[in-house]
Length: 145
Image 1: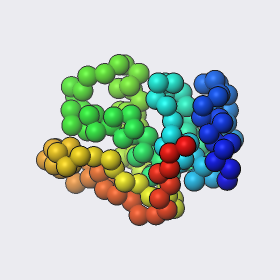
Image 2: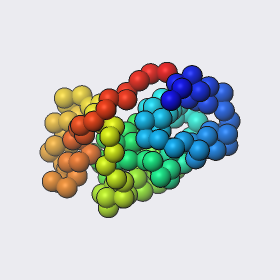
Image 3: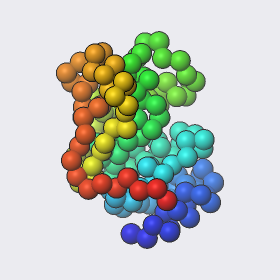
Image 4: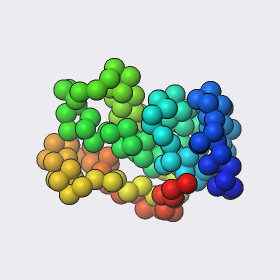
């Protein structure tokens, strides 16, 4: 895996080019690193393409969920403020994760929550929802490009 190629696509592609690049990614680690470094100012089309890539695992799905401010959604599912597009993205991703639509891979996931956020979430989450804040063991691919 050539990280300079990932970086090149992250910072120089149009949204359409980025979606095409994401569709062409054939390994979990590259997909994770791309998702980890994605600039959310570019919208939801690229993250949606990442989720539809056959190499997308539960670690990547959870990374995207949290990167899209999924913790806010978990705290206030029925009343969370946000754009219609954001609510649609996080609620659909929430449902997909809960249904078990993503396979286990080899990449790790570490929720980036403050102690206060973690405490609040533990008070409102059901047992089945704890997977949203539970770390997943594996290869640490959290790498800034």
